[in-house]
Length: 100
Image 1 (cartoon, rainbow, N blue to C red):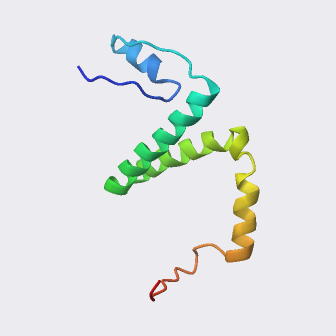
Image 2 (tube, one colour):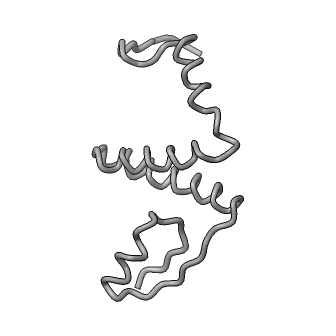
């Protein structure tokens, strides 16, 4: 049996119940939730980097969306738009070569 202690999607307990898989469930504190979301972002990003599949990218986006709802990241969309206006995006596919 695999051991785990991590943040999961909201419907995972229902899935485990249907499969008669035993587990313990608790609700994270606000501080722990932030920490666990950051760990989940790392996990999902690593999975995307290996697989490069749309499903894995969707998982990364889901975690980012959850992080954006936290008070400390609430302004991230405004920051994103300012950076887009100032520095542009990535649509032109520009690759720079040089030395640092």
